[in-house]
Amino acid sequence: MSTAPSFDFRAFLDANWKSSGDVSRFLASYAVDQRVPCVAKWRERQSVPAQSFALLVVLLEIEKGQPISLSPYLK
Image (cartoon, rainbow, N blue to C red; front, side, top):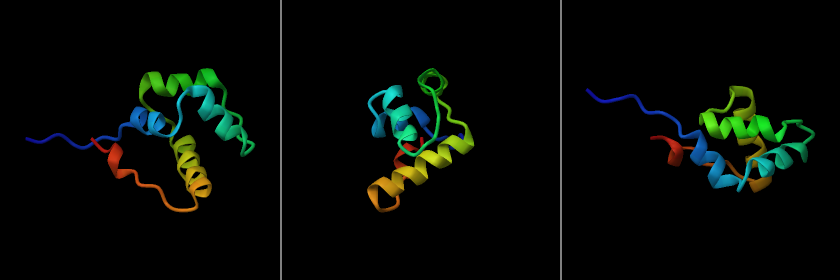
């Protein structure tokens, strides 16, 4: 029996930002207040709340000017 795929949130965060502070500053540049300790917990728990994850994806797409691929983070 195979296991269901899961999303590697930690790998997604690590691939796009070097630290929790970088994530916090990135969000702050779009007037989203997300404190560093909270982002550090995302990394620790390897889980990002749905609304915050959606914001990160959309804001990254705006920054890059194109859609981003999430398939590399599926494990």
